[in-house]
Image 1: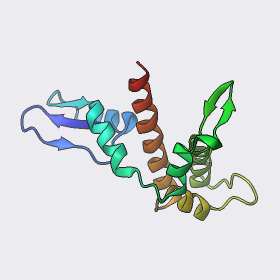
Image 2 (image 1 turned 90 degrees about the horizontal axis):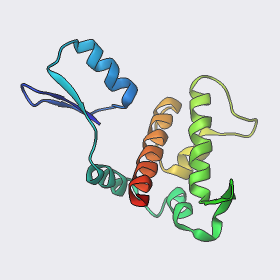
Image 3 (image 1 turned 90 degrees about the vertical axis):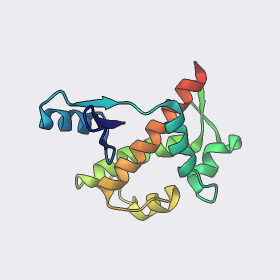
Length: 140
């Protein structure tokens, strides 16, 4: 997602999601800016830059022997861990430890990401969005 100035062609891309883009457009309060969604090719390019098969998460995403059934549909262990880790990091960023043995370093190692809990939650949300949007366009 990006915000483009219609007049100058300037683009704003850093840290944008639907919520942030809406706030920025309201902040500028003029019709010179427009929100533009990423194309399928841009989303796939972002996703391919993130993939590193030395990271346990990506290995779990492709290993079909570790699939599980969720609501009678197969789901990879990597996707399951991504969904739970999104929840856990957003809880931890608000000062709530998800459970007694939970450690943020385990999440960092598993996904190969760095940063504070809130930054990690954003990164996990971005990974989840890219994976689900790419899968939705392939299934159509």
